[in-house]
Length: 478
Picture 1 (cartoon, rainbow, N blue to C red):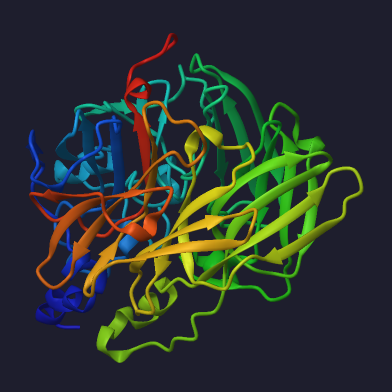
Picture 2: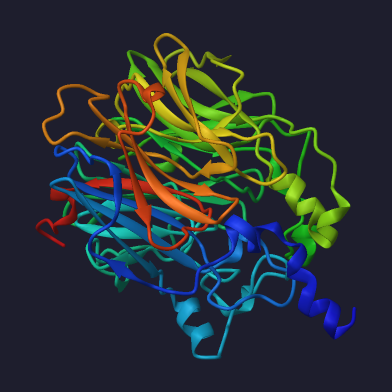
């Protein structure tokens, strides 16, 4: 490949251009323009994480490899302000200093360096625990602490030096106990770890579970007493394992297994439930009903797309990244070992969220991104599910508008589970502008109560969270 061709290769990468293109400024804007009225009983912050390369890549680049950037919009007394900051991981700072140590997943893993096998970007998820924002990375890295008000990076979170190794994205915070339940996995080794950190930032339990082989879990679930782990059949190929390269496939000979283990138990207490093979990216919620553990999640289905030559060397990546998933329910009986799976709805959806105050407890409602039938990962609306009835409401964005993962924000004096608002960023991909919309969670079909104009585009990204104002203050043991 010529130097000129190499310099232009990322013109063909849709995840570096258009609505996915990174922004190059960290800004703070104290007063945002609002169309409509922001409710007076909305008080807190909506945080969204996602990839934002600090320098434009010149060789092959995966969307997952961009440096993490948090975008925050703060609401109080009918006003809104905006701030965005990079997640300054160790690898971010090394690259900024001109001494990059690790690279992305298009090259072999950097196992000889220790730590993480690829560049740790902290770009995937963001949760609030004990007054800190924690930016988390999907391959398991060091949690990065950020100040919830300024978004300044405070360093890695090792829980007083007790963190055994790393933490993966989609670890969970139990709002009732303020416990942080996390998982970790060895990318090329057959191990899975689970830990619990209490409200005083103390590690209170840790267990390592052996697997039949290396696995690539993306999410977990918790209930009041259990952690639900996933052993799923999307794994490395033999070539990938041998060369330590990101060559993965769905092994049709492997089942999908859920491992249910007491949060304060040991590895020997785990109980496995087996189903015909499938993959799950994201869980809705899980809880206990008598002897049953009930879990809702988005189950992947085939997108039936063929690689498109317009994307050049990125054609296969684009095809794989076009997610299609449907809402399903699994019931796992801890006494008899019986298990069953039910599809709730055939609407294409992903990135589900709930009222976070009920994580691990029974919920009736969930809020999802409606997947657009496009070749890149885009949402064309919001779905609100009634899990008891198996029905949904739908709010569709305008033409050429696409959103990111929503968040549920309870009212200050909320009276029930969905007494609040659904918030999401929406990009106009025609003029590359962004606004944040606020929907009434009781009836999202009414459309936005308010639209908040963001002074710079927020690139399409990954996951977010809502934090009430009182969650943004440190608790004892911080």
